[in-house]
Image 1 (tube, one colour):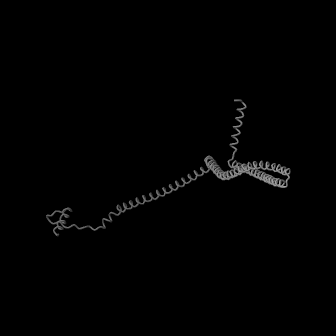
Image 2 (spheres, rainbow, N blue to C red):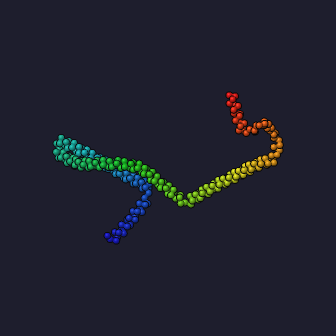
Image 3 (tube, rainbow, N blue to C red):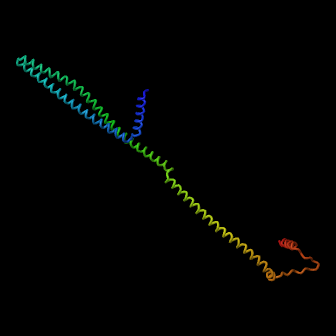
Length: 259
């Protein structure tokens, strides 16, 4: 492979890459529709010219056919009048017009075929353009959606590394820290209040017990003096003092005897 071939291939590859990157689907689709519409205009012009040429050929054919018929009638008239030379001349003229009419007839048949083909091509191109317009709108919508999705994804990817997002996260962290400090302060205040009430209740209980002890110790003689002394029943001679157990036993016996 020669050096110039390699250079040419590299240049064409770079140009193709540049063109591919520069192609915008929406613009290319619009331009494609414009190109097809220009082709349609040219094809319509070609069909119009072919039809016009066909009509001119048809007119010429009709004129030569008419002239041939006219010279045929003149030849017949000359023969009726007995002028054979004039009739021969009329037939010669007729033959010229007939030959021209036959040539025009063949040309007219070819033009008719050509016009029919152009008309079919025109209809097919119009259908393709209509289909291309429908596809163009659909492809443009898909291209716009893809571009929007790409931009959105790029924005989402850039949010994580942007300074705005970092600042937002810092402020969120500060708010969380402030809320935690406020909750901790509230918990400490509640615990201190609970401790104060617990100490107050404990001291109150101690004071009550202390007062009760003071009353028991300081007021014991007066209490004993105020209580009446129970008189014990006299013990008969020869009887010993009954114990509480014996007294309860006697009481039980009496209850059984009374039943």
